Image (cartoon, rainbow, N blue to C red; front, side, top):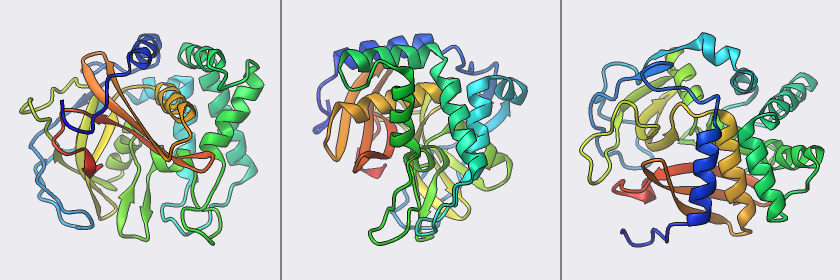
Length: 292
């Protein structure tokens, strides 16, 4: 085990495997989507805008968009992706239509088995109230309540935007963007250039059907040296996992080691006061967890 990894959390591993098994909306690799991993990414120092391109083609070769758009939680999720201003420091303006979209997304995920299991667990821990209405408000606050990333500025960010949509810090570096659907849609619009995979220590290369990957890419000209993402999972799965880890602790950063399927992961959740700052999975046998 690497130093600083922490011990495997058995209770969470069991719970997250239950969520994984209950994730009916998850897309199947090779069938609902195909990825092409291509070459191994090179080292990029933080703040650099240059990266060797080890991948001539996009990461996503194919995604069944009909399936994506016909699944309620994905469709509601996709409608939220264009609601945010990329740069921090630029105030977010929330319209009534966008609030309706946030509510539609929360209503859709709350109907899923995944969120029902998560809610039940959180109620058992007394971290959430039993009423679905209260749970929905709690999720709204954690994920959609706007806050400012820099003191003294107007509210320019929220947990959902950071984790799922991505944003740039003063136009210099990419923050967040840990979601595969957003990655795919941005790649399709030529805003993302996939540079290659970041290999795990004891595995020379990932498999095309791995559902957790470490990637290197540039987004609108800025390079992300390592971005890790679940691939193919539903948005409710990610919201459930990150919400649970967020509510476990009042620490600024919570890191929990879990084994989900064959993946040994560290789930990292960064708290911004009462809200989610960022959240992502780290594949643990990767060489350098500090890169994320």
